[in-house]
Image 1 (spheres, helix red, strand yellow):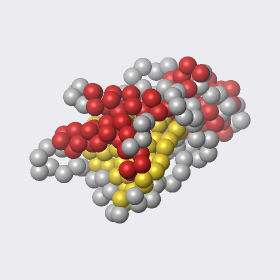
Image 2 (cartoon, one colour):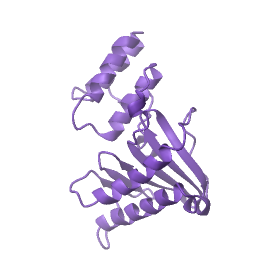
Image 3 (spheres, one colour):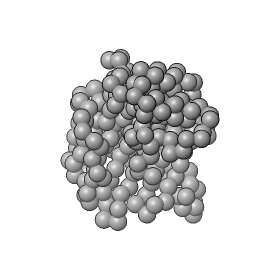
Length: 211
């Protein structure tokens, strides 16, 4: 599930199937075909139609911008730093804990055990917690630049990585938990992430493990 959280799957693998007819899948498929045929202009035009579609999931927005950047069409300055999502990765002895929140007000918590809580915004009860995390992320993104290389492998045990997902690409900070927690920018992000994680776990209900 980790690889699906960042909106940066290679255009030739998104989506996996070629027979999807609903949007935005159809536009992604047609853009992929255009790129395969060497028609970069047609691919860019098709990807831009994805971004014009109403009520688009944040991860689809990120996928479209990822493909557009690779095709040589970066976002305009006014959109480059817009935070579409925040993904917090915590390296534990048993594996990796993941928390993700998006501008479309969806969220996910994935335990190192593989259990997950998926929040697709069925109501507004978590809106405040999600927006607090995104707001803290915006302050960080305003102060740092994007990562120019492929997304790194998961952090090791005892390390925390805070990923900020934008149209201009990945921004992130990483370090031991205590170092980030005491940082003026990273601390508020971690505090908001913990609150959202606890709220998501609460949504699973007493005695009901995450699915």
